[in-house]
Image (cartoon, rainbow, N blue to C red; front, side):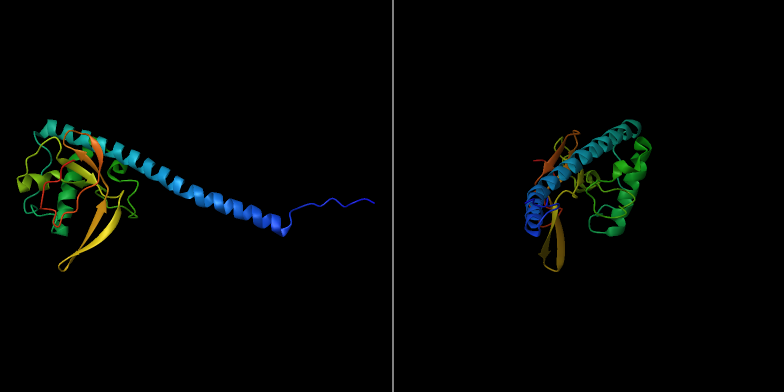
Length: 192
């Protein structure tokens, strides 16, 4: 007696294959996310170094780094002043870069991103506060690689990001796990 050749899978075999694929996917998705984050950090590091080079070219031409327009010395407290500072910074160094993509961090979730970029320019704030400008003072930083944490201080909700990618006055770029500060003005932003 001849047996019929079976073609295809039974339901049990199909369920086993699906379960194996699901288990492998569950194991590999965190790895893919980690690789993607490392790629974002590499791209962001490149952007920060290019922005640093543009700032150095600006300093060679004008004798100092871009500072802030009048009336924006407390720009972290005022959204309109913050926009003025970032517009001034963007317009000052854009001729040295000539590529808007360099101003945008690939990890920035805003769509579309802010026209003046994803990076925060800390130098004017440090200078206004009278902090000593040393090689470990933060020049630019990117908060988009950390997870936001909400914190309430009195009636104000503060969003903190950690870690941050920082570009120092000497041009080096580091991942900075900053200590929590109650106010931005408490201490100068330095690394480490």
